[in-house]
Image (cartoon, rainbow, N blue to C red; front, side, top):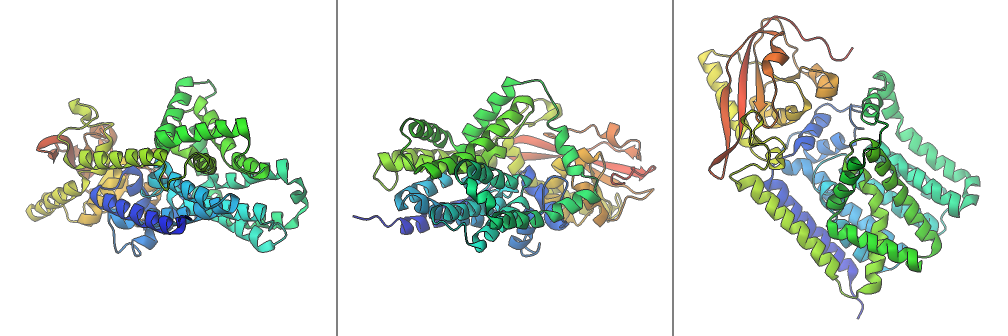
Length: 511
C-alpha cells in the first residue's frame, strides 16, 4: 500500500513548529540572539559580524519591533525550517523518490543544527537555510530535469545564492560546490552563457556587503582574519571541532551519515553517478575546509553545518534501502535524543537550583549555558524597580545611561533591561569587544561631561569595573547586588554599579 508521504510531511512540519513555539516561549533568548536584535534596531547594508538578513527577518516577525519577545524573534527561524523542509522533500523526490524524500526531511528535522540551531534559534543561519535548501532544489532541477538551457533557472539560482550570501557570506560556497560539480560532470556548461548571468545576479546581491565594507575599511574581514591567523597545527582544536559537529548534527544522524557514505563508497548504487558527484561536491569540501580551519584555529561547529545537508540525502537513501517503515529506528532514536535534550534543557534553565559552570565567587556561573537563556527577564524587572526608586529619591537622573564594555552581556542588557527601562545603552570599549554597539551608539544621546551612568556586571561575565571606567568617571560607588534565584537557590548574581560624574569622554570607537 502506497504511503502518503506528503501528509506525513505536513504533520511533521506542524508538529515540529508547535514544539519549537513551546520551547521558544519557555526559554529566554541566548547571547547571540539578543545581539542580533541590534541588527533589527539599526538596519544597515551590512554589520560588523554578518550581513543584514537576520536583522531584516527579526523586523518582519517582530512586526517592525512592536512585538518583542522570545517567540517573535524566533518565529522567522521556525517558519524558515518549515520552508527548508519542503525544499528538502522536493529535492529528495526529484533525485530519488518520495520515500527517500520523506526520510531526508526526517533527518533534516532531527539534526540539531538544521532542525534547531538554525531552525528555532534566531541566527544568521536561520534565514539562510531556506535559501540554501532552495538553491539545492534549483540545482537538482537543472541537473535532473535538464533545465540548463532555461535562463529562468540560472537567474533563480543566482538570486537564491545571492540571498543566502546576504545571510552569511559563506553562501558563496554554493557556487564553489556547484562549480566543482560542473568541472567534474558537466564541463560543457562552462560554455553556457546563462551560467554566468546567474553568477552575475549573485554578485549584484552582494554589492551592499561590499559597499558597507568599503565605507568601513573592510573591518569585517580584518576582524575575521585575526581569528584565523595561527599557523601551528592544533590537533586538539580539530578533535573539538569534530566532536562539536557530532553533537550539533545529533550523534545518531552523524553516525548514520558515516555509515551511509561508507556504504556508498563500497557499493556506489545509492544515486546515479551525476547525483552522487553533485551531493559530495556540495558537502564534503565545505566540511573539510572548516576542518582545515579548525586544525590551526579555534572554530565553531555550526560553521560547517550547511555542508552536511547534501549528505542527509545519502543517509536517507541508505535508510530507504534498509527500512520500509514510516519512522525508521534510527530516526526514532535521533528524535528521542532531541526531545530528551529539549526537555532536559528547559528543566535546567527554569528550575535547576544550581549552575553547571564556575563555583568561584568572582565568576560565579561562568560557562554555564543555562544562564544564557534564563534569569534576564526577572532581572530586568528588578532593575527597573531599582531605577524608579533611584529617580524618585534623586539618587540618579532619569536619563542616566547604562554602559557596557562587551557585546555580551550588552545584548541581554539592551533587550531585557534597557528596552524595559527606556534607558540608552552605550558601548564603551574596543571595537573588537563591543562590535555592533559601536554603531548603535550613534542612535543614542552620547555621554556628556558630568553625567552619571549605570554598569551591570553579571557574575558569569566578570568585569573589572574600576580598571575599565575609573578614567572616565570621578567616583564608582560600591555595587548593589541582585541575585538570580532558581529552584530556591542562588545561581548567579548581578552587580549594579553607579558611576558618578563623567570627567573624561571615552574616545570615539568609529573614526
